[in-house]
Length: 276
Image (cartoon, rainbow, N blue to C red; front, side, top):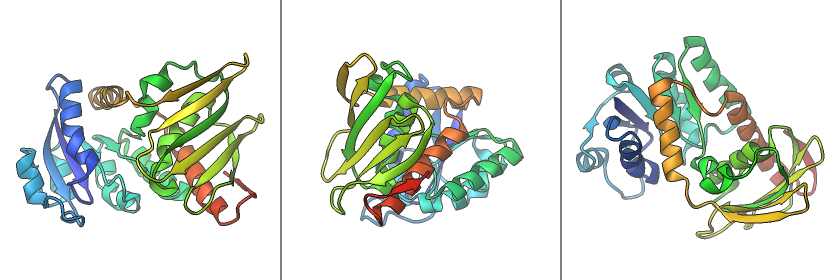
């Protein structure tokens, strides 16, 4: 199976690691064969041609051509979700299986529009945070968690997905409102569920590992650092490319984006609830 990469620019962490992860997870049955990028790296990294040469991938000069010759497509642009709707438009009308990298969209409205294109054309599509597949989270019984304090690096706009999606996986989809309780430098917000349960999401500067402290109904607690996720994440993508069956529903992905959007609105008025 030959996969095509579509990216804003290619020399970024996900594009540099996905080829080997997918090759290993598929026992060599899946390879990244083609790549398209809107621009060369703006960070002084490899140009598109240099990246393609280093990874032994054929450069394609248009999204249309890449979609036509690929068996399935990965839309990357992980740190620039503002380009996802544009980059996804043609792939999601193709009927071929499409994985869209985090963060799926900037707003709930855009997320709904993207999925609507896929639904109308019958194109299998999903998006996920790799952290959702951490061994440390998968070992927890879904629905058993009563409270979470989650932490990680990065800003709300681009890295909150790595905390929000695991929270949705562990605690369910009934998040009704959020409140910002952090500062400009140390962003933090509370997610409130309809049944009163709470999850705190906290962002920290520097290389802070992703992890959680979880409280359970039997008055026990557990702290975990999410460290082992690459293999599970890649295996999930391989299964999707082979079967067309996604492990995450569009509704879950859209909810995650809605929470992140609400958190950014809440930051402008700390201490007040914002409906998701």
